[in-house]
Image 1 (tube, rainbow, N blue to C red):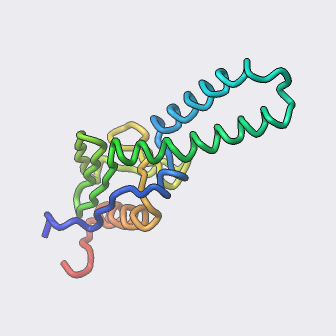
Image 2 (image 1 turned 135 degrees about the horizontal axis):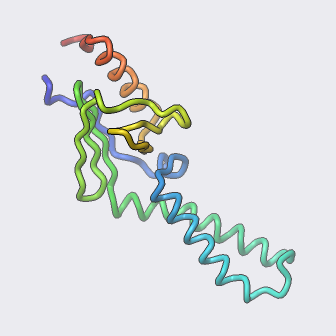
Length: 146
């Protein structure tokens, strides 16, 4: 039964819209600032309505397109087992023992994995199952039905 995952989840587009890792944040900031620098010379006045609408529109496009591109390009997937967490990010596969996973209390989806902070791009249900499994492992207990 150790090979049966407790939870298996592929990250959805909606999760990528509101949960972001460091790479996604940097890409979004870079694209937004790059677009802003391209748009600046086209407008004479920065407080004009066309400039404001352009900036808002560009921000909306960046915030909507980057998660879709990352979803297609990297295909993030998370598998939770009784004793480990497996993270797939593109062609990379990282397997981490749950003893190496600790909650980082800044955000609910941030965990300290092997000493480094990592944002898990998963749903609240997955996070609840992960926290439950961490607590069970800490106490040396098994899930019901095993």
